[in-house]
Length: 254
Image 1 (cartoon, one colour):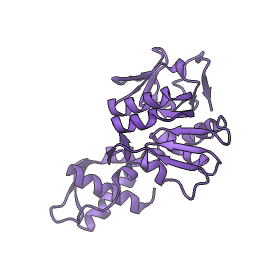
Image 2: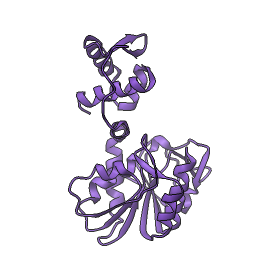
Image 3: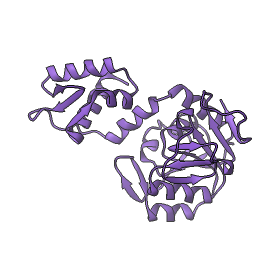
């Protein structure tokens, strides 16, 4: 991530929260605490924030909130987390897509990486993620953006209208992400009911459903059950210490 992007993200978070934690920013942007500390120092010298113990606060007379899409910055930051692993997983998942197919891409950052590989393929891509669509550059694929109630923080549409539109369609394959998963319980989870409803509607209207995740999401639970891991055609995951032995038959490790 460029220094200018980090600066915009920091200023955006300051205007949103008033005070921010150095360690949280480092984790969100997948950068070192030393880098954040230097950014804080630079911004303080420019009069845009005041450093405090463990973080920074907004100056009363600092610059106005930047006119940016904070959801887009958040997405970029999350895409940088375990980026190499996400690339391997996405590349392997794309091997299961045939030219001419109609596929649905979920709104997670793991799925956004797939779009980088698919946008030049002669296929149809449906999604409810505006950010995913905006991340494409002169795509060859035919792109369809599903509308509904727009969530600016996530850059995607949800709600009854979104689900109704999806129910009128049919997809060869859908690629979804999850918040976390527990192999022992054979369950995947998300952390919001609105996104859960959209994911379930898409899966119900697809011939095959695929789950993409990284090992950092394993051995954890959330409060919204998505579906059994065994119900997915394939679960694509990177290698890591969190993987049990033996693995479920539908897991593909890359």
